[in-house]
Amino acid sequence: MSWVAVDKLQHGDSLDLRTVSSVIGGDPVTRHVRRATNKKLKDRGIRTIGEFANCDPKLLSSLKSPGRLIWNYANGIENSPVKPGGSVPMKGLGNSTTLSFDAEDRNTAHLVLLSLVETVSARLRQEHVRARLISISFRTNEFLSYSHQRKVQESTDCTDEIWEITKELFAEKWQGQPIRHMGVSVSDLCSDDFVQLSLFTKDYERNRKLDQVVDSIRQRFGAGVIQRSSYLNSGLSPMTEGVPEENYPTMSSIL
Image (tube, rainbow, N blue to C red):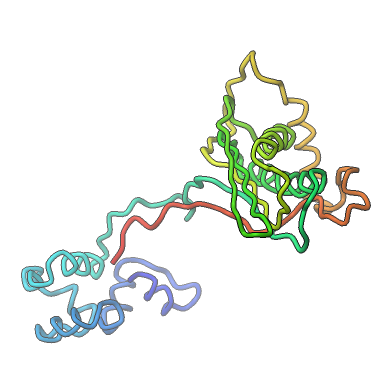
């Protein structure tokens, strides 16, 4: 209910518990409870948030757990963990696009996939995370959907590495059907602060340094200023914006 107070306060006013209480104390409780609950509260002479906050919690026994929960909220008591910076941990991210034509050959499908990988990998580096699970999906012109994924040994945010994996996943799943929708997603994320390298996997460190240079140039001059030569005269975008696919955890408490 604190957002009610914030909405009513003028810009620049200080905000503390007393201020919140004084501002929302006279607010009708009908705005915050269901119709059946409101009727029970009226029977007890409770019509405002202030009256609700000051009443004896024992009077709310007939409302069971919702009554206690609302009473806690009216008194500013809420035990959900505070998310630093107002953010929540990201579980995964991805990108997908619906084509205006049927992609019927491998080269065209690869160009679409690569454009999606470009945006997804750039987003990983922007968020300072790496992924361990790489997934691709596609839908045919007959609306048949297919997907494939692979868990990698070492987490990655490298465009070329993710591209090699998505290309292999696509080759294992596609059987030549005309394609109208394609997607690339990554999950099982971890911070890029520490990476344990393996002696048995390909070293993409030079590629990562190149990614950082390209990211810097694109952020300064625009995404289209640098593109691969394979997109010249192709009519396809080298970085498909498409439809972002991000997974976030749900709210921890529900009134």
